[in-house]
Image (cartoon, rainbow, N blue to C red; front, side, top):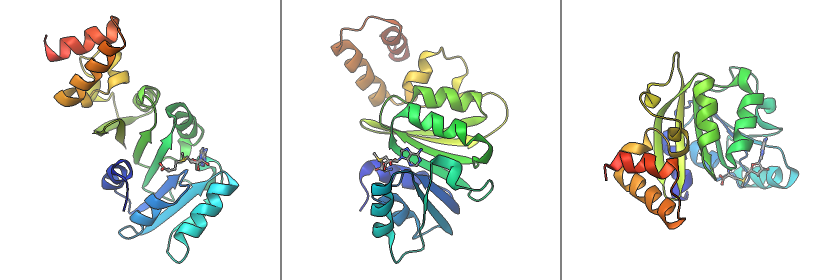
Length: 198
Ligand SMILES: C[S@@+](CC[C@H](N)C(=O)[O-])C[C@H]1O[C@@H](n2cnc3c(N)ncnc32)[C@H](O)[C@@H]1O
């Protein structure tokens, strides 16, 4: 059974041909292979690569050794996931593999997703959904033209909090309580306070 974090990722993946970069224990590819046409797991470190190969042995998951999208051909998959890494690392993987990126990206960073949101907006990916699985967020991004309408009327603090998550009152209240507990009195707290109108 997947953790709530990885289940939230699996729930968003469209496929039908999918690649997961940084699969490690292989749990996500193992889950996805039950319903998708093709699942490729990519690992760049020997230990996690071997762990993944063992975990998916006997299934149709294809495990490749490589750095990010270097292990893939352009047009080979329809969707891509990257989970459980820092957002700056994820952004670098996306940027380096830009020419090969598919139409759907499902991303679950371990820290603030701001750098990924900024990259996506500049590189033709719109936010379809932002899920909050406290304390994690999952971004479902789709290739699209023009500016992402999710940011319309919002200031740059939206990159930090997530423009779609701002309509979730529980999320906003939690972020606000967190900033207050830190004694923050800067623009981010003011931004959230304006959102909840108090
Ligand atoms: C902390 S694990 C996360 C495992 C799984 N995705 C999860 O969310 O539970 C991160 C994995 O990503 C792999 N990794 C990091 N950078 C990578 C890259 N550029 N290409 C392929 N794998 C990478 C690491 O080797 C490591 O096994």
